Image 1 (tube, rainbow, N blue to C red):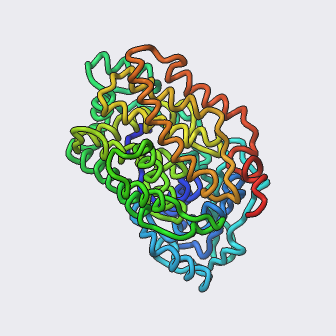
Image 2 (image 1 turned 90 degrees about the horizontal axis):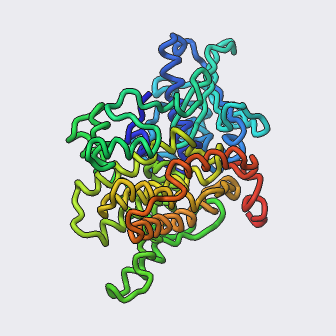
Image 3 (image 1 turned 30 degrees about the vertical axis):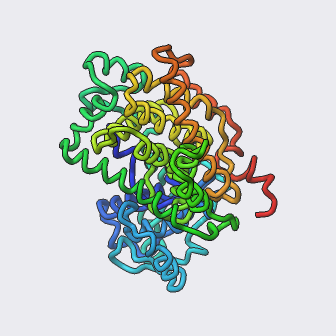
Length: 457
């Protein structure tokens, strides 16, 4: 299938695109397949099976809750975060699921969700299965799915080869690498944002694309606004929110009087989104939810400090950033469970840098160079969430990476047209190789790193 900008940027509730968003999407796909195969009416009960990383960090990522919400027919993009506690309480109190939003079936989360943290499929560590049973307890259908990062889902019968999963054969300007993208830009005499826009016209009209991009930007900004106003602790590890605290200091300082003004804005914006994400709030996969604060923070800083900021330039930012993420998706991975946090925060840092460089007037080569630099200096980053929660280290890691993206753009543009060494594609290649070499306990299992040495949780 061909991949769109709107496959990279998707609206949903946090905290994880692989472990929260993905299970909801997988549950909905299971229901569609169950109905198409004529098994829905015969189904009297359902069960959920979580494997490897899905089970090991599932509680902290609300994977169990997301699976139940998906089986009830809830859509990630339209689900009201405020309604989630009530839905969860009803399921746990009544021990029933409103299957597909159509009929009630018995469901006891304590018994009908199976946690198989010690079992893994060779294909991918994020395995989740749904099982429908008839009134006699006989299996009607079992669907096994893999959440491969950024909210992308494949079933066991589909190829997990990234080039098969996200091949660009339907686009007028297909590319799988940064070099191919640059060549297309030279051939057409257009920017990365323009080439990506022309590809998007394969699915939608220009007004529709612009409208949806601005809606994505609005959700990002709304997350910042909510996070900057929130106080108190983030549930889980007893950590306090810091976005509002930082923001109150920033906005109380006279304009231009603070040495770290831009940096503090970026910090506050990134922390705000991630604090919303950690509390089942609405965010945008960019490209994942675990890294959802980086692109919004840099985009918001551009809107705050940039010159001649327009709706069109905001769209160009998002087009270029998502367009440059496509080769990463094809040749590496966004999944923390597959390649560590370098696939999440590293990819998001690349996206923020390419988007910013685009709207600041960078050439095609500079945009790709900025992305390469941003990703290069996140290589080897492990995914070791404490207690399976995104509070540590994900939240502050987003703020640090957002500032790193800004600096990557600055360093790139100060260097002029000097070729990047290593190149964009070489850095992406190393991301994948490093991820494959990385020890499993550092890939979203909470079995190594900070998750082990943090002993007071």
